[in-house]
Length: 248
Image (tube, rainbow, N blue to C red; front, side, top):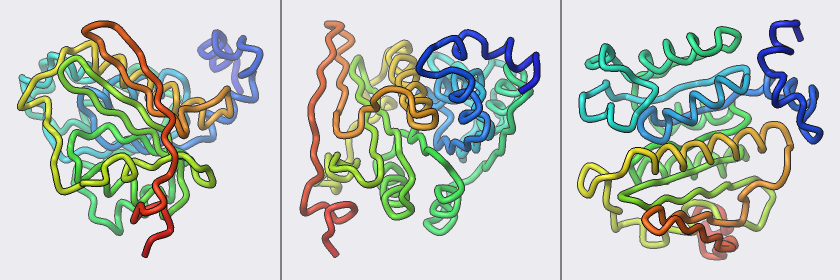
């Protein structure tokens, strides 16, 4: 590690449970981020700033004026650009020592599994239930940790799935997957709420990659920002889950 790197990351290297070994683990790590919107923006920026070695960004969409209220990785001058390209430029300006790979497309099942296979952690930052379920299934199948988050109105949630544990996967939580949830395009969302949830996703991803502390595996963290209340719910694997429960 160079002197510049030691200085850049010095504040987290100072942490006794992190130290230089934790920083080295981040530098050698690969994170897959699906979605560069309200959640993916803080996720990508904090993982880049923290020194995760390679970030693979996946998003088919382009920057729109309505995105800028909460999607802080993009700028007004980026309107019309692919989100992955806009985000890449911001991340490399923030930390030129990392590698950023961009995929400006919707991945089919085989492509998604291959990208998941190459990652050490996957962060689900999308806003589409079918995509979330596909990401979850790919992570369970490939045995790669998943950090998933969601936010709408003034509410949010974060869940971590890790292979080999008894904690619920995302599919366990949504047993009736035929009923699509509401989206922020329909009901709205307050900008800092996605910032809070995205920051928590980044923190959990860093903990997974570095081995720091205990993750939210097996625990669903819920935020009610209107009352500024947090709630943690233990969530065990659903035996009948078609993804992780052993069902055919």
